[in-house]
Length: 470
Image (tube, rainbow, N blue to C red):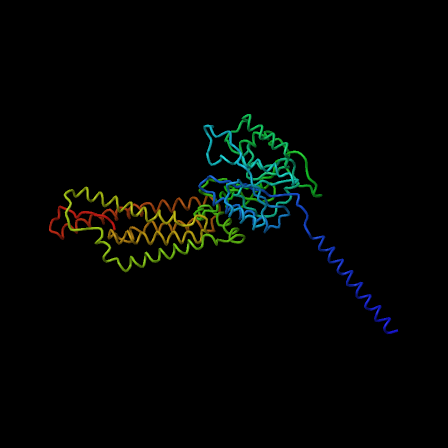
C-alpha cells in the first residue's frame, strides 16, 4: 500500500512539473516579440562638413527613443557611402539600417538652392518602408521629452505647422506606399515646384492642402485614422519658443518633442551652443545619459595636458623668451618697426583666442568644452605676454570677460528670455570700454618697450628691430 501511495506521489510530481514546464514555455512564447508594425526613422548621408556631428545626433536620438520604451522599430535610411563603422555602431544600438542610393536632386540649378540640402530628398525613401503600417520620419535635431507612440494612430500624412502657413518636415507621420514613392519620383522627374530645392519645399508642394485638414487627436480606443491631419505644435516645439520665456508654454497638444531649426553651427550638440542657447545643455544631458563621450574624452585630456605643459614651460623659460623677439640692431624707420610690432602682437593675441576654439572636440559636453577652451586660450595668451613683454591683465581682459559672459548667460534666475537678453546686452555695454582700454594699454606697452630698448643703446630716436619668432 505504501509503495502505491509513493507511486501516486511521484506521478503527481511529474504531472506538476510537466504543467509548470508547459506554462513556462507558453509564457516565453507570449513575450517573444513579433514583427513590429511601426517605426521611427531618420536619414543619414555624407557630403557636408558636419557629417560626424549628425551621426552622433542620430545615435543620441535613437537611443533616447529606446530609453522612452518606444514600441516601434528604429530605422536609419543611410546612403551607401556612410562609413561601415558608423553603420555597425547603429546596428549595435539596435537600429535597423536600410542602405539606399542617393536620390538625384533636380533642383540644384535653382538660384536660391543651398548645397547643404542636396541629398535631403533621400527622406522620400521613408515611403518604401512598406513592412510598417506607419512611420514617423525624423530629423536628427529632435529631442524627445516623452513617449510619442500615439503618433502611429495618425493617417496617411501628418505634420506640424511651426510656421503659420508652411508645415515642418523635421517630424511627420506617413503610411508607406510604393505607389506614392513612385509618384514622387515622377514628380521629381517632371520638375514639380520646389521653393527651396530640399525635402521641405517638395513635400509642402506635394501636400498643398494640409493646412485645411483637421487637427490630429489620437482615438482613445487605439484605432488608426485615415486621411491627412495637422499635428499639434507640441510635437515640434521650436526651441526659439523656449528662449522667449525660458520655459515651455505650448497650449495645443503634449509638449513631447523639441526641434532646433537654427543655423547649422548653433545646433545643440556643439559645445559652444550652451549657454548661448540654454537648451543645449538639455541635449547634452540626454547624450551623457544614453551615449556618453568616450570618443571625445581622450582628445580632450590630451589637449588639457598639452596646455598645462605650455603654461609650465612658459613659467620656467619666461626670463629668456623675450630675447627671441628682439635684437640690438637699429631700424631706420621707427614708425614702420612700431607698426609691424603692433600688427604681429595683435594677430598673436587673436590667434591665442581662436586656435583653442577650433581644437576643442566639437561635440564634447559644454561643461568640459568651455573649461578646455579657457585653459587653452590662457596658455597661449601667457606665451604672447612673455614674448612681447605685455601687461598680463591687458591681454587677459577678454579672457576674464568671457568668463563673466558665461556666468551672465548661464544664470538660472531670469524671469524670461527678454530679461536675459537685456542682461547680456548691459554686460557687453559696460565691458566694451574696459576691452578698449586694454587694447590701448597693449599698444602703448609696445611703444614704451621700443623706446626703452632704443634708450638703452643711447639712440632714443631709433628702435630695435623686430625679428622672427622662433
